[in-house]
Image (cartoon, rainbow, N blue to C red; front, side, top):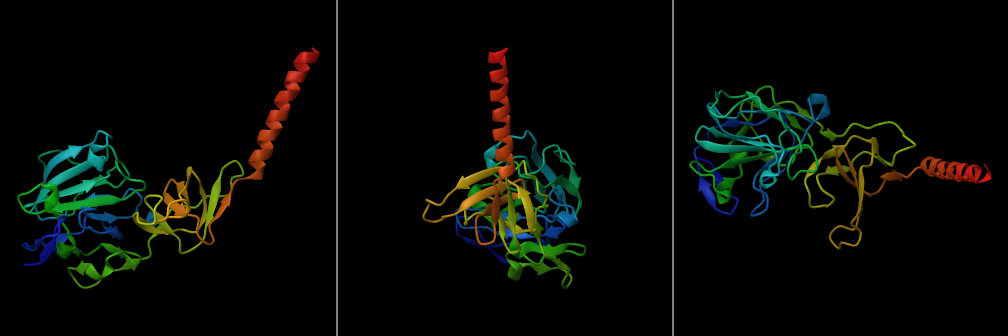
Length: 283
């Protein structure tokens, strides 16, 4: 019987149900953190179906308890689903709205698709937030670290960049590993603010060095949606850029393009407008 650590710091012995991981691409970006983060976060891989990876049932018998598909906040979970899996309550958060393949009351075998990964709720980048509760409980304090009872099954792939690699268990030996990159680079667009990201830079879920690492950026150009200046914060001290895939800090090698082309176009439009006003006066 493995020992597991609960959200509030207790150590509890439980029966090992030998659950499979909840998706076929296993790229862990953050584990359970005492009194702070109540589950495990999984990232995505574009070449393997990401960012909207299929989310799978983990137990031998899985009954759907509840589905929240309203696009709301829902305690930060966004769109989410809970199941009874071999006596444990399991939660999948930040799901893609309208991606649920099941309904409340369905009883499903292992490995069945139930929804798709997304970034609804308290999320700033596509990922799965995954929680398991002690048998018979749905209390927040009874969430526990699921790593001791999760196993890689045949056909599942582990990211070479995965966090907690030393804790990942394999049901039948070892499996294929792949490097996890984040994002799909674009081409140069003189009408948009863009950043150029080199190899080896982390993509994060929030503009903070303590936030979830979603993986390594696929090097290249990305359109900038938002800029956040955190350089006055003692624990941060970076300028941050948000793309559709996550946040990137202004660290060594990251280049920002605020294009002079756009400024020239803006000035040209202003001159044309002035000319039109002058023509009105002359006429």
